[in-house]
Image 1 (tube, each protein chain N blue to C red):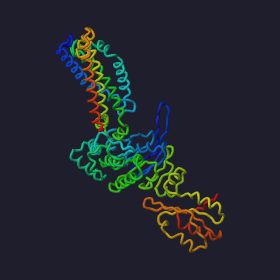
Image 2: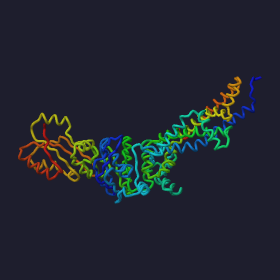
Image 3: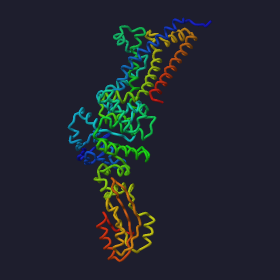
Image 4: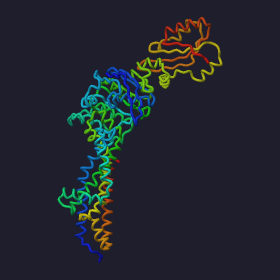
Length: 340
Length: 219
């Protein structure tokens, strides 16, 4: 369990103070994959470094597994850090050491025996699928392989929390997929709480169950990924959501709509079960309206389907109102779209 | 026959003296200089164990020692030399100022090498909960190893240059041979031989350093 309580972080440089975080609170439960998304400079990399106290808050408290980090001595803090793994955008592997020795480092720091180290590292190498690279040096690996080694190194000391600092930002889309799948597997098999910071909404969409959207040192929206994706309120959140869910009417459709004055246009939103029900067919059968689907899109988040549809209804106003009332009972959200 | 005033025994002795001076001062210089370099890196503002007082003392002291030309340092510290090796003449007497000359130099070079270590690696080390000593031993030094080899190579070559002035305190060596015979007694052959030997030394050490550094960096 990770809890940030009203965190402020201010950097002082040459007498100029710069507030990186301005009152941030969040809570990740055990087993969560918590995503923090924001543009560069939003304060997200400061935020993730607070969780393992690489950065100390100017004000506020960081609580990990029920204990505030500021109550620990330096020595105690070092052993707490051993229970929090971290992976990085640029991997930060030791170029001078082999893959095996890189993964072994946290165990060497824990003064484990040679035999124990060999067993654990061999097991981890197998888990990340790089058993044949034990004797290679990081220079000989691809980006995705390096991140796998970074993950194995972070897991070596059996942490309960894994922090991912833009872990996929330097990787191509396909490699990103495989790394995300690996993180998901870690979360499920070892019940490790994962905190991910990213600027890619696709990362949040694919593996996170909770999300916080950051802007200018503040969290502007947070909650279950599904509810944030389904109903983004802040314009920045809407921008992020739009990168993975296309819910705007395409220009060509809009153009033809403007030419035509007949009918009324509605935007529908489906979540979960309602996405798989035959709603449109029910609509046509029961109401004397012509239905014209202008745009439709389905996205899967957290094994739940999120659908968007824009339809044009033609018919008398009275019937359309009835039809809308029917739809309102079936779908998550219905709103009339202005055609200007 | 070759026209020269020096004997081959003299030449061999000079080579021996140079090697002895370079070897010993490198050893002691490194023993002092490497910790100095580490201290400079870890005590600096934002360093691993930030210590403004220590850094503010160490930094200018090193600059002061380094701003003295070796020939001046050599004579300026003669009383100190006498205290350490109980003599102010000879090869041993030359080693004391050589160490004092090279240690801060090595310190600065080591500092530069260590500062080049990827800050991300230092961050990873801290995130793993490594103690400052563990960060130095398991992360900083191995990552800077290739660069440190080149550092020691540069220091060695600097030392060879400085030993040439050791003749002033009767330290002998190739430089002394070249000055007292080649220059002062107009023996061109001695000049040529010592120059060639010094060039071979420097080239050899540089090449060795490059090879070792490349190996350490897995290139």
